[in-house]
Image (cartoon, rainbow, N blue to C red; front, side, top):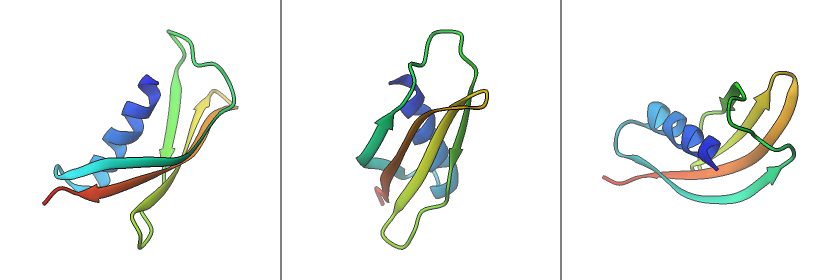
Length: 74
């Protein structure tokens, strides 16, 4: 689950310090992420409703896909 923290950090980087992760309406764990795995996380900018698609890869292998719903605390 630690890789989802990386997704949250990426959302904050795109939305500013007040941006938060509000929900994960869709997450699919395709591969096990193990300690020591090097992760490549890709997060797309939010759409009009604040949803961002994300992918987590281990090398060329797609490990996790999903949609994160962010928002602004302010």
